Image 1 (spheres, rainbow, N blue to C red):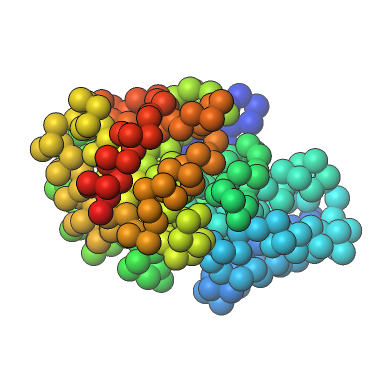
Image 2 (cartoon, one colour; image 1 turned 60 degrees about the vertical axis):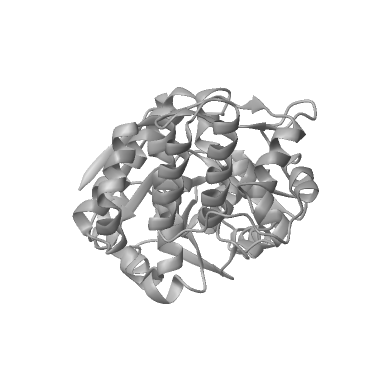
Length: 359
C-alpha cells in the first residue's frame, strides 16, 4: 500500500492506494469519529461493494442512500435525498458520510457533507479510475445545473481517500478509458516524463496491469496533492488542472449530461486546447499529433460533436468558473509538460479551432 498526504495544515489527510484495501477495515474505521455513518452510493456500485463496507461498520449506526447512476442525476434533487436520510435518522454534526462510488457520487456526497449542519466529516472511496486519480482528491464538491456543469458547489476536504485498484476490475471499458483522460492530463500540464511513460505504457494500462495502474494512480494523485497543497481554492496553479475542461464542460452541457462521459469530453477538450495552443504559437504540430495519438490509443474520442455549432459551443463556454468579466479563459499548453494559467481567448481563434480541428 502507498500512502500520500494532501498537506493542508490541520485539514491534511491521507490518500491510501493499493490492492484489497476494501477488506482492510481499519483504513475506514480509523477515520470515523462517532457512531453515526451514512453511506452514499449508487444503483451500480451498491450490489458490488456496499456489503463489503457495511461489514466493517457493525459497531456503528449506519444508514445508506442509494442514488440513480449517471451524470444526469448529479443534481440538487439527488443531494436532497441525502439530506432527507440524515434528517430522518436524526444524525448530528458529528456524523460521517462515506462516498462510495465514482466522481458523481463523490461530488454530491462531499457537497452534502459540506452543507449538512454546516459541515460533517466525509470519506472518499472512489470506484472509478477517473474518481481515483482526480475528483476524489482536492475537495471540489458540487452539482450540475441545466445551464452549466459544476456551477453550484463548495471546496470541502475529506478525512481520507481510500483507493482500491481491485474495484477497477468491475469497471466497464468505456468508463476505464474515461479515467485515462485525466491521467494523460497530468503528464501534459506538469510532467513531460510521465507523458512519455504513458506513451510507452498505455497498452499495459488498457489491459489493467496492476503494477502499471498503481504507478499511474500514485503519480497522478501525487501531482494533484502537490497542486492542492499549494493552491486549495484555485486562485492560481490549481486552475491548470482544468486543461480541456472548458471545452469539455461545454460538450457535456450542450449534448445533455451523460451523453458523453466526463473523461470523454475532457479528452476532446484537451485536443481542442492543444490545437488552439498551436495556433497561439506554443505547441508545434508534432506535439499536437502526439497528444491526439495518445488519446486515440487510450480509446477516447478526439473530435467534437458535429451537433454543436461553433456559435453554440462558444455560448456554452461563456458559462465557466474560470471566466472573468465575460471573457472566456482557457488553459493552454506552452509545451508538453507545461500548462499556462487561464488565458483570455478571442472568439475568432476559438471559431478557427472549432471549425478546423474540432470537426
